[in-house]
Image 1 (cartoon, rainbow, N blue to C red):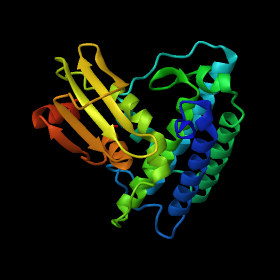
Image 2: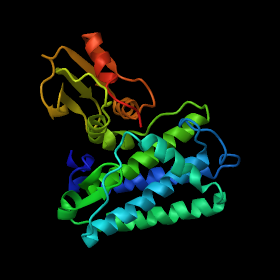
Image 3: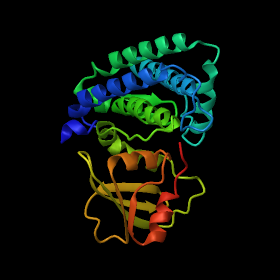
Image 4: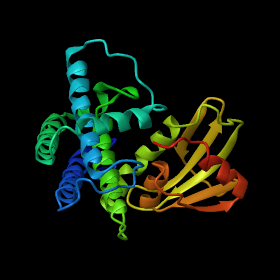
Length: 271
């Protein structure tokens, strides 16, 4: 179902619709009485720091698109290894601003970002290369996925911090599934043992399927294909895959060689 694959232009309206929905839910949660200083699932982050992170990240996207449109030379990518620490510092750098100021800024940033993404043409959605601060040049659609990761996963973080039972919405999880392979591919630990092996990943949902994953000295590669002949298979529903890739939970069901499944799951640092 191409409308669920936001790597294609056919999925553009769908992912932007869900970004707006998730953002609205995040903003509503952040404005509940007593919520601003409440804890979240992110270590040492309060709700106000989640909003700070979203503001910092989105405003960095504006700079990235300006650079891409101008043809200017972008700086070298920061890399994902240090992202967790740096994102924490920048998220907490807005404490001098009030809740009202930050919420107004977050809403204005969302509208401005949607004003950048919504007019993108089919050629621009997959062909305009925009320099990502952490990852370097990436197709424009990655920024829509980044917005959904921030608003979707961090809304989950806020709910998790409340102590109430909850779940990741299906639309959000389904749209993020293809991007989780990129997250895994990009977050292999520098000291990881990359002696070769293959493993299967089976994911449910509207954007799921079977994927053959190969680990080797060059890192991780993957492609759709038959996985029943592989020595280990990890089964995920979409939500558990997203939350596992982001290091929020240890999810999935392992079949076959348990040591191989465990080895795969421990290849990655968490962001």
